[in-house]
Length: 184
Image 1 (spheres, one colour):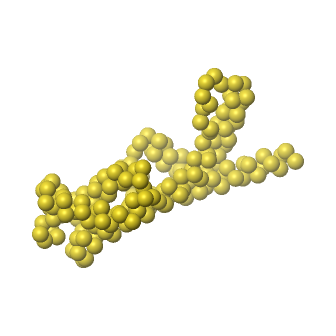
Image 2 (tube, rainbow, N blue to C red):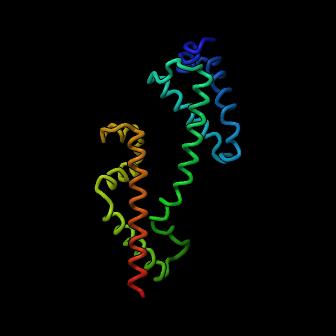
Image 3 (tube, rainbow, N blue to C red):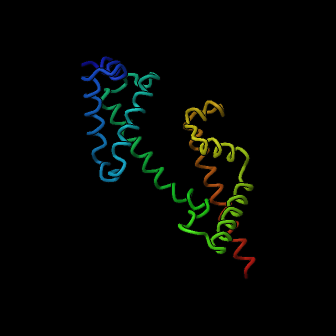
């Protein structure tokens, strides 16, 4: 089957084209399987969706073979997910603690309110653009739609969100340092 026929068949749901692309996806992602074992099927589905989006948008321009293109998309998707995983702890440290199980004690309430105060102070020290982006993320809006709303390319938007996270983490570090100096 020619590359163009595979792309159009994949988009139209042709079983032979889908099987060909699926085999390439699984082969290309095989080296990442152990790292993504609990989320393996989700990762493969995300890759299928990304390929469909790219094919619909005409991103495959036959500059290389379709198989090479699929392998490239798979590798980039896996690496992006690994990068996302490595960034997550810095982001999660900003929020309040998970609520304790059972009845909350007065100490739990005080700690929780302190966490919220810290979070609000961190947010007040970040640019309004960052707060706007986080609101959209919390509302479940994807990067593609966010990029349309903001008027910039999705990859540029991802970088902006990452830099906003870095600003928030830095603001939190400054608050912690100020708090330590105040206690001395």
